[in-house]
Every structure is written in C-alpha cells, then in structure tokens.
Length: 185
Image (cartoon, rainbow, N blue to C red):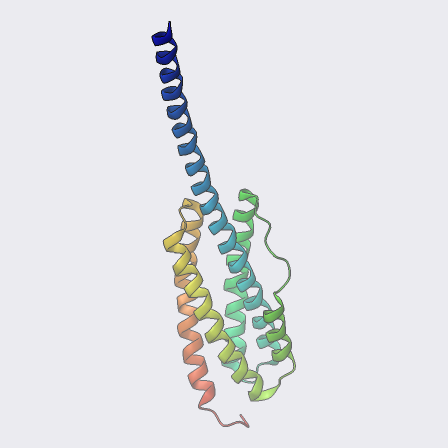
C-alpha cells in the first residue's frame, strides 16, 4: 500500500510538472505575441504622429514658403503623408489600435516656431526640420521593419519606407539649395 501511494505521488508530480511546463510554454507564446503587438502599437503611434507633423508642416510650407521649391515640397509632403496616414488609419482600425489625433508637445512647438517665421527664415527652418523629421521617420521604419512580425504592418512598412527615403533625399537637396541662397531671396 505504501509503495502504491508513493508511485501515485510520483505520477501526480510528473503529470503536474508536464502540465506546468505546458502552461509555461503557452505563457511564453502569449508574452511574445503581446511583445510584438506592443511593438506594432508603438510603431503605429509614432508613425501616425510623424505623418501628422509632415502634413501640417507641409500645409504651412504651401502657404508661407518663399521659394516655389518649398511650396512644391510642402505639397508633396501633404499628398504622400495623407495617403500613408489614411492607409495606416485603416490598418490600425482593423487591429483595434487607437492612433493619436494631436501632435506631441515637441512637434507642436516646432510647428508653432515655423508658423512664426516668414520669408527665407521660414524656408530655411522648414528645410532643416524636414531633414531631421525624415531622418527620424526613416530610422523608425527601418528599426520597426527588423523588429515587427506582423505581415500586414511589414507590408505597410515596405511600401512606405521607399517614399520616406525619397523625401529624406529631397529634403537634404532642398536644404542645401535653400542654405545656398542669400537671405533676401
């Protein structure tokens, strides 16, 4: 009887440890899924904020820009970032992610600064901000491309990243051109 009780306890202990390990594996999978969902959410929040800044600063450039190239670049930003923003909003809604509807304090301060400028001072500051903003956006998309495992989000990143890289190159060229102009132009 005593041997039978010991065997029964061993059997229960073995079964419990197998069940525990099995549950532990499920917890790891859930934690990993949650980690990827967290990365997706963080990416989408930052990307949406970036689009909002680009659209609003582009709108300012269209009206306040001195050089036609500033106005044209502003229009390109509004067009391209509105398109990517709309695609992201649809993807976020499908995934149950709520995107920001207002700029962060630092981006709002940058927009306020731009709005207070005129003439070549506006064009120069806009050009510099676009280089910085697009360097940040390209970095965000490249980093997220390597760290996100959601097929739909990866497809969005792969579709949008070349446009951002093109904007960055355009912003750098525009900045170089604007910086080379006399202050009065």
